[in-house]
Length: 332
Image (tube, rainbow, N blue to C red; front, side, top):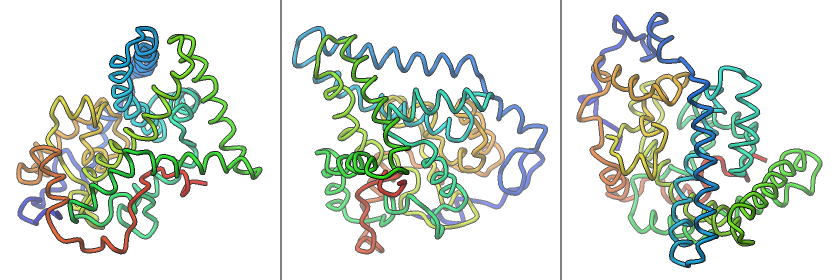
């Protein structure tokens, strides 16, 4: 799955991009602009939709509506994770205080993520993908591989096995002083969230059905599929085109799998200081420079996943990829 040299011509630096692809200072500023008001509206809208889904699912009293609302919460978890990721990069708000407050209490803790630990782990990922300190390798290593291995992993995700391994770590963390400092605030936010979902839905089971179970199951599947689409089957290199995939963005994928422009992942790895709103424009900049070419880009996520399952495994037996990035066991 490593792109050939023919698909990644040597075009850098240019009159607009530096030797690593980062825009030159006079151009970089426009791509790194953070919109505080629009991001605040995005966070508020996400919460409104989340509470609205729970209200509909609980108050209508129809099992099939509740099931649809359960399914709809998978992409909602993806949205919480992406905005939390934005806050981890300090790109959600220009104020560090508000960035961390909102990122921690309204995004990361509801999503059961210790953002401080996640931030340190995630920056290690950005320093050197596939390097010796890469924290996420167990999640997307071992590709290309056999279809049955991916199906086995997705099956573990779908039935909650992977999710329980992560949730159990959070519960067990309260046994130590250091673990309590991280786990107790997250668990306290879950109690508040449960009360809020009960208030809007009138159903005592709303938290379980519309938050915890989707996090345990659907989110695990979506997260694994997205991670494979970002880095699966690639290798360490100074050329980001060798470490990060490029996939054509379509509306259904953006709705369900890669919201908030996170599908332009190559652009994010070329310059992790570009906020999510500007990733499409920065991707277009890389295209105009010839850094991103048509042969480099997968036509769809399905095409990439097929490629990930098309060959006998190279390191598959050496990597147990069952838990995923931001695995709580690796963060504590």
